[in-house]
Structures are given as structure tokens and as C-alpha cells.
Image (cartoon, rainbow, N blue to C red; front, side, top):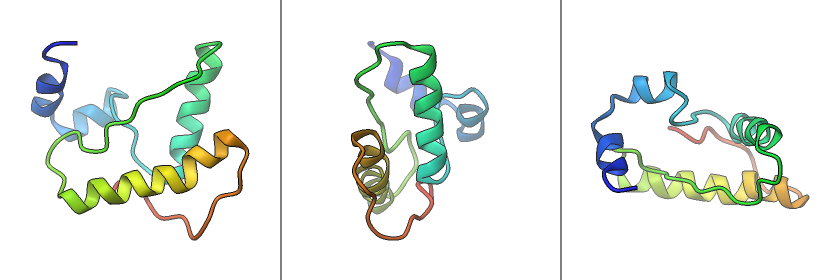
Length: 90
């Protein structure tokens, strides 16, 4: 894994989106992406998130973590989501 995060920081944002390196959108968009990966990777039980691929303000990273925890994780646990849904990448 050495050098992966450094390379990620050097990759233009648009290229990361086009290359399916980062997922941007509403929690529902991210849920769909995770479900698509889960369909391909049978037995997938864990995922990892990086909320700051580079260039975001600290508060934006915290907001992304909160949205993921509030809306995405409960979907996979079968729990109801709480509060209004906003865009993960703002």
C-alpha cells in the first residue's frame, strides 16, 4: 500500500471521479455504488472510506463522515436513516 495515498493526492479530482476511484453524490448514490461492488465481490463484509482525497477543508471531511455514518451505514445494518439527506461531496 506504500505510495498509494501519495499518488491519490496527486491525481486530479475529475480523473478520480472518471476512473471510479472516488464516489461522489448523495448517500443514495454511494449506497448504490457499494451495493454494486458487493454484487461483484461475493462475501464482502467490510469497506473502508477516505473522506478527504485531497484539497477539502477539514469541516467538509467531517461532514462527509457524518453523512456516511448517518445515512449509508444504517442502510446496510437495516436501521432507518435519520434527518434530511444532503450531498456527501459539497
